[in-house]
Length: 138
Ligand code: ZN
Image (cartoon, rainbow, N blue to C red; front, side):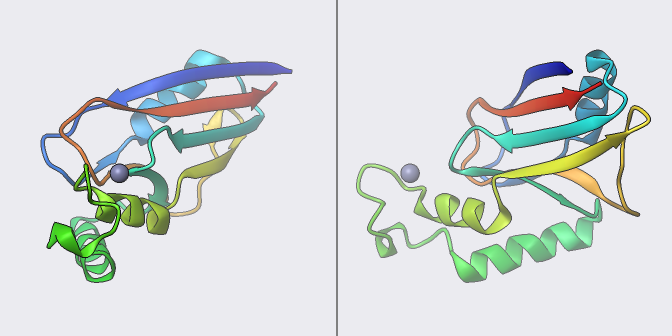
C-alpha cells in the first residue's frame, strides 16, 4: 500500500473566506501516484473547516448568512471564550461546517458526485493556517 502526506498553507485577506481547494487536491493525487484508494483532507486548526459543496457564489453568501445567524461574530462579549481572544464565533462556525472530508479515489481521480467540490472554510483568517492531505491506496 502506498501512502502520501502533504500540508497545504493558506492565508486569507479576510476574517472569513471560502476557497475552492479542489485543484490543489487533484495535484496531490497526481503527485501520490495512487489510482485506487482514499483521500482524507482536514483543517489542522480549530477555527477552520474543510467541507464539500457547490462552487456557487450565491450559496456561499447563504452559508455566510446562515453561520452569522447561528453564531454571530459580534458582540464579542456575548461569548465566554472571548477573554483573551475574539474568535469564539469561529470555533462554533468550524464545528457546524465540519473538520474534514473523505473522498474515494477511483482511476486516479476524485470519485465525486455532480457539482461536488472541496472547500477550505476560514473563520478566523488573516494568518497562515494549514490543511492536511493524506492519501492511502495503490
Ligand atoms: Zn479561540
